[in-house]
Image (tube, rainbow, N blue to C red; front, top):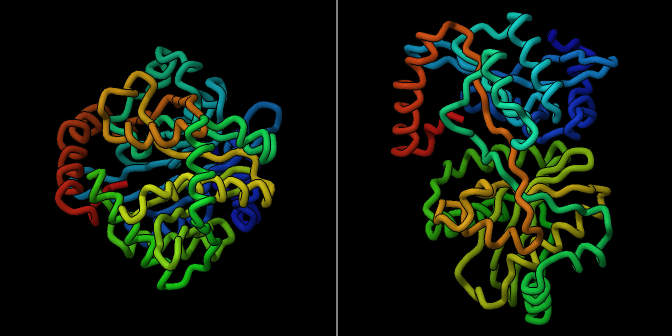
Length: 349
């Protein structure tokens, strides 16, 4: 593990897209600069693995009063095999470049492939929480429109056709103040139904505008006879796309606009050469049907692909000794969670 050179930082997103996982939008310079406006400090590092392979990893740090500095690598480092994962952990520990309380890894290594006992041997501790969902649903866009549509459930195809026949139109729209305000209104309406908590509008406006300006984001809005029905904000990097945000009003729900939005977003991605669409956020496989908060979202997303991909989740590397880390687990993170529950502006991650 070493600090990235100036040349590597100048072409950072290119390096991230070349990572074994295909890159992640939460590892881009744009995302790091955005998080710097919300309490975090980004730093770029490079891991050199066997065979001369390089892994670009952006770590975020912040000072927690009374506890010290914490480090978080959102959806990174970008490795996908247990061997590579353990190597980046070893290098992180040996390099000593992350001084503070703990460092949190969130690599997308599959849960079923990792030997949990090897993590404890590497000095890792399962994190109290996963800032992002550890399970998701992927849609393979590479087969093309006809084959992709055939892979959807019958009800998804029926609802797409219903929206089309009903006159719903999905537009690729610019990031005007009016459109972004509409998008946030759609999310607020959805949150009111699902009760999952929502950050302030200025947080979303900040990264929506930043990612669109960087050529890594696009807004879509669905309308019918002058009425806005649903919207989606897509992020993308290289050959991967992510369903970052979405929402819908209760108006004309019988037209099934969200299904057509997803279909048109997939079509748009295929036109851009994107081959994998991450629907972001699903219950873990053993939680499906148990009433967890994202069960309803799974019901919707499973219509496009019922297979859940479950990653190993977040693990922490204590940096300042077990006592300090234990104090954080027992007190610090709980206090942060309570503050977040009271005020979304104080979400830690």
